[in-house]
Length: 247
Image (cartoon, rainbow, N blue to C red; front, side):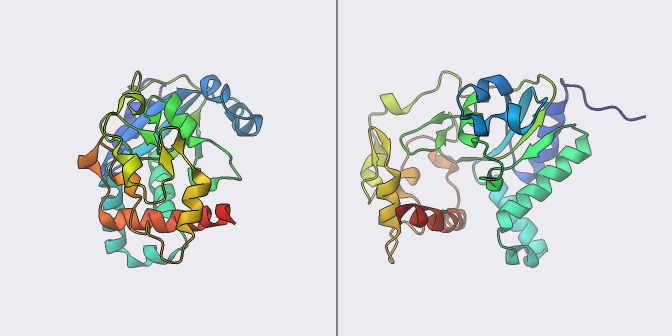
């Protein structure tokens, strides 16, 4: 007879299963903590009744992109689907969750708005990052070079290390390189001006097609910047959403 993983080893087992794929950022959040700061329609108590905790899955640095590129090299047809990186993410995470026997519901950011989970808020609740002037989470080691790829809502209380507890770098940053680097002047000491950024990127000669200049110049985690092809991929995927916002 097989038994579900205990709440003690579920996080460790999933961490080990995902690490070879570059998904090396694992945190946990309590459902009530997350639900307390999101609108009712995004509350996990409504979306996943019975869930007590969420295992948050992400990557720090470019290892996950490297795993994706290696998978595409083995099977070039992967690149032909509409959203190849999202498809790869679902394949890897679903397989890992099934393999280690976690009884939970897997959630993905790219299923928004059908599943309106705030992954930024989940990351904060899991102690994986703090919101920055750039609008993205900052990690103490990786800086802005993290992405939250999935979350597994489980019925047990689970725990993981919380590297970003007590971390809030933007207020004390002296260099503020991100502000100077933004060609749209959409980053300031009060944060990211989304409409201004969107209007700038709607130009035919989008100056930010290759990368977000402000993100690249963040003083934290510079050694972990994504490679150029990853930067261009993500910018290309984000542009239609921003352009739609500007119209």
